[in-house]
Image 1: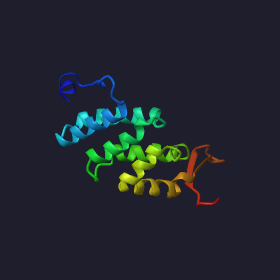
Image 2: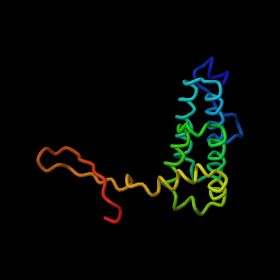
Image 3: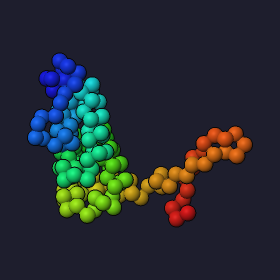
Image 4: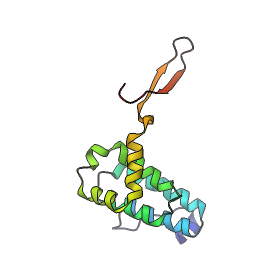
Length: 142
């Protein structure tokens, strides 16, 4: 946090999971009301989980993010649910991911909502007359 205050950036401490570290920094930024640090750690966290969701550190980062942020703060939580929902077929094979689902009911509820949402069935096509891209949600099963 102090490094960020002087240099507008921070680095992950050697030997620490980057996903877990960014979640901790986000929690500190929320606790001490530092919006710029919160934004920075959120971006770094999103990058870390998008490329590292298959690592054993991902479930640990889930638990840390849910422990260190209020229920009303979707900054990290929404990113976690999005990445987990996109990769659910691989993640359900991971016992640590299963543990995170059981330990954090709010995460499990977010996953149920994300996986059952109709917004996953967005269809895009071009309009035949104006050639603009049009999006629409199809009902499940179509």
